Length: 128
Image (cartoon, rainbow, N blue to C red):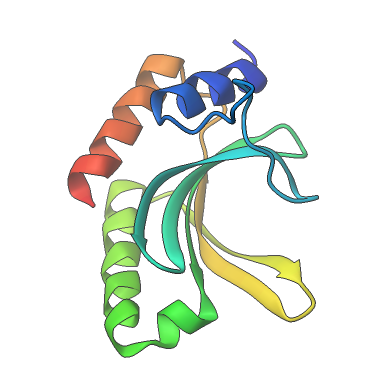
């Protein structure tokens, strides 16, 4: 199964298709996305179909969220949980504009079967 098909099935499972039944678009960096869980404003777990056709599960947070006293605790706790669940996850920075970026941790999951991906999403929702 191609990553485009996997992304549509995952977005459908998450209730994240747009009004036309298509995967929501993102930015110039990706083909589509779906939120798995929003932990607080500025800190969320996503599934993203990147422009290079890779499929990623990411934990992303804004600088403002990480530096906020209350949200920063949530971000730090989330990083630890994400790294425990996915020890192979890599740290990254995604530039949204010249003055705005998100940091996070990501894992390439394009090689996983759809049932494995459903299981990963269910685990993430339980753990977070």
